Image (cartoon, rainbow, N blue to C red):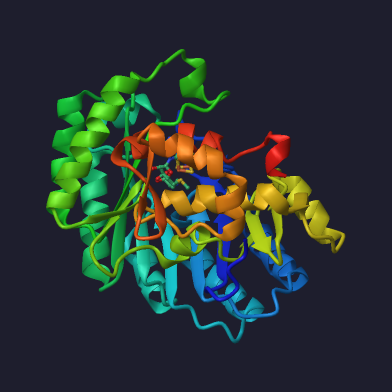
Length: 374
Ligand SMILES: C[S@@+](CC[C@H](N)C(=O)[O-])C[C@H]1O[C@@H](n2cnc3c(N)ncnc32)[C@H](O)[C@@H]1O
Ligand code: SF4
């Protein structure tokens, strides 16, 4: 359900990377740096075709690897966004950076462009693990990137790490986490490894040890909270006031526009996704068409299920609407009996066990639904 009282988010996808990591399923095109100028022009053309009727208030530039752009290209990207949304006053602007491509010059441009939040993808601080998944930086590069980011400005810094990577032992992961916490990030995302079909890692036959993964995540949660970062979303922790406002808007069912290859939008009750292929994206915009691959109006029980799944991602939970409460009454009661959900002051939230088994919980809120709910 669209929360139009919340801020409108603007997401811009930058699909360029210095290589392809073994686990990655995001839309990204290594070795296509020559297409950046055309891409920036296409983003402007796409923005002209989207009419949200109000100004976006949060901006998130993600990827791919936005820091793969040169300093000049980053300045052009922000100039293009300024032309496209001249009256927008962003309350939060996030930019994703990678250790191998961020430098002082780019950080300087980001400060001038009004970036308030940097998201730095470390993934691990163990060079053997980084190498095993095809990352193109070392732990030293990561530490250098973090120090440069801290020195460059008073922005909020978020770090990403992954748990369950090949070659990662429990002790190795927790030792890396301790070093990450020593850096003093304002925000930390810890993702359990998702093995996506078709990625080099999945094709290699690597199988994550689920019990070990859970054990690592459980130990990590306690350490991160003890370091003063509160657990506010399944995978996210923040110092007070450093939660991602852009992402909170997603989880609260707010509206957002996505520009760029494979970007998703949710506007006026319609959920849509752009084409992922770069040339098809360019072709659509050359013809003056929105580059949509799919678009659907959510309604009824499907809309309620989506609202429940998003709301449950928040550790504090969500207040189920009368529709959610009625349509999913028996499922909710079943999940409470299995100790995966609980009610807390009118809110429905995941239990600690439910946080680890969140995918099982979410399965109850996606189609096909029983006739009686519809
Ligand atoms: C948009 S992605 C990539 C950002 C950036 N290009 C990088 O590599 O650091 C954002 C985050 O998703 C996480 N991620 C990507 N693929 C994943 C996977 N298969 N399993 C778990 N986490 C993943 C990584 O932590 C990554 O930093
Ligand atoms: S994980 Fe990041 S750097 Fe690696 S391929 Fe995916 S988007 Fe690119």
